[in-house]
Amino acid sequence: MAYTGVPSAVGTLRPAAAPRLALVAPQPDRRRALELLASSPDGCTEALMLANRFPVETLVELIRSGLASAETERMIADGKQIEVARVRITEAGRRALGVDA
Image (cartoon, rainbow, N blue to C red; front, side):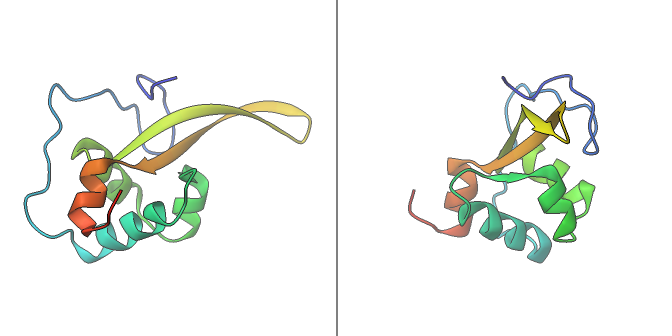
């Protein structure tokens, strides 16, 4: 399911008409976040990103600029069904890092 109109700690995100790609090297926090996402084949949950001290604003910037994407997933935790956001690096994010896809 695409991550649209779903409230979470990163806010309610909707896809931009056309992603704005970063034309310069990523800022240090953004680069570190992209490196973590690139090393995680299934992406990272929003909670894991926050636990690694990435501010919500950094996640929002990566998603809005087209360097990362986010989707909601349903999981069972403590016997209850919950929704979590999973963040993944995009091809544009890999290009920004200079990583082969």
